[in-house]
Image 1 (tube, one colour):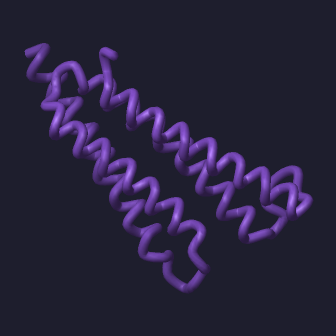
Image 2 (image 1 turned 90 degrees about the horizontal axis):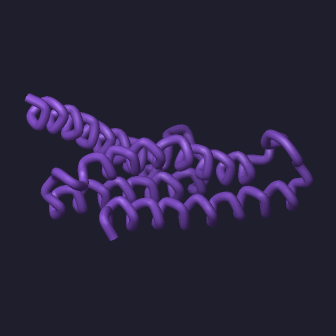
Amino acid sequence: MALPITAITAAICAIMLLITAIDTVRHRIRAKVPFGDGGDTKLTSASRSHGNLAEHAPIAIILIGLLEPHANHIALSAVAGAFLLARVAHIFGLYAPASTNPPVPRQIGVVGTWLTLAILIVWTLYLVVTLNG
């Protein structure tokens, strides 16, 4: 396979998307809510865990795929792994009981996602400039 880091990252994200989609439908059926969240906090958590992953995963996968032919594979694997761990933490954080502050796993997930995206963005721009000098 030409892009193994990208493929593994995409496959793991797809697994997480499938699990969160199934859980969202399960909560929709339980709450009898065909659209929106109907004020059901468990459905909101399930729906947002799926939606937030669907919002962030595509750009991360695209950037990893663009970097893979030119980047250090150990470093890229570490960033991809950190992204995946951040997304898992975010999912668990969204399912944690609500309080006045976002749960720690959710905070870790948000910050981890943003940091890994920032690294991927800067790295991609750096390679564009240096390879096309």
